[in-house]
Image (cartoon, rainbow, N blue to C red):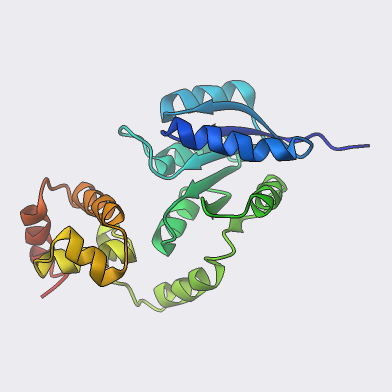
Amino acid sequence: MKSQPLRLVLVDDHEMVIEGLKALLARFHGRVRVVAESVNANDAEALVAALDPDVVVSDVRLRGSVSGLDLCRLLVEANPARRVVLLSAYDDEQYLFQALRAGAAGYLLKSIERDELVRQLERAARGETVVDPSMAARAVSSAARLQAGEFWPGAHLSLTQRESEVLGLLVAGLSNRAIAGKLVLGEETVKSHVRSIFRKLDVNDRAGAVAVALREGIFQ
């Protein structure tokens, strides 16, 4: 007897991303089926409760006060059997660890090949914990370092390793453009990291971030 396709709910605050995912997944209509989509966490909660999908696929970052990590935590608290896979543009192991702590069934990158994405979602639906193949080896290495107590500066403030690197360069007085060149990143990516740093440190500008970094002894 042929198995039914996985029923998915997609959550991303960019409609173009959702449409792109739907178009990609439509090629695998016998294996997966998108039953609903949402651009915010509140609507997503209601949809998941009403439709009981096999897997919820959510971006890590969502507009508003509730992030994809928060949404994952809420969904799993409401139903411990809920399978939530975070789909992110950030290949940072700290985001992966945060996702797993929130109860996620997996953490995949938006750059993943479409065939691999479907395979990983199927594995997640079967009860496995899935990690993007490009991150797996680094994640194991980072987990070993964390277990040994080798934290990066700012880890205790929930900064990712990359955000810690960016903050260090902010403390050194570098501009976003200079940081981008130093870390071989796009300037928009640096701006995104800076915004995340401000949010996590509860500051509004660079001066505030530098002050917290120095006060906390993150960088001497």
